[in-house]
Length: 126
Image (cartoon, rainbow, N blue to C red; front, side):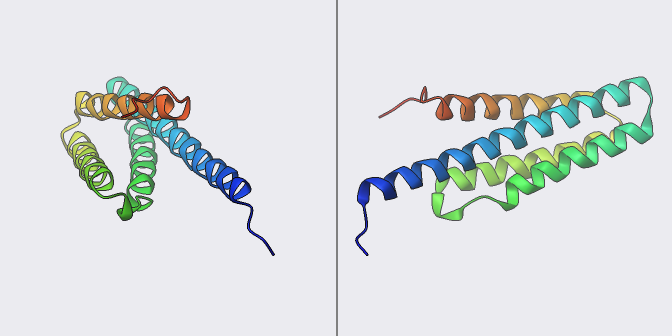
């Protein structure tokens, strides 16, 4: 069986794009949950705040566990950022501080936009 390099390249592109879209979806889900958690906290709905905060943290934990360490510095930086986010959310919950949740949401929104640009081919090329 002969390997078709063009076909192999196409398959790799599709798999990479699919993984990128999955990451984008995870960012969107985490953002949604955290916005709902912050809103619930501001409205005094402790049960909903706790539930949504846990969901958001689970998504970030999934992003953290799915990092590919072979990606070197990028994976290391994302690992540090995701860990920071989880710590901030734990602190936000302990202190009842919606602004800390907003801070993490903003970081996720920045990451989401970066991923969106990469997927759309608008990322900076060297």
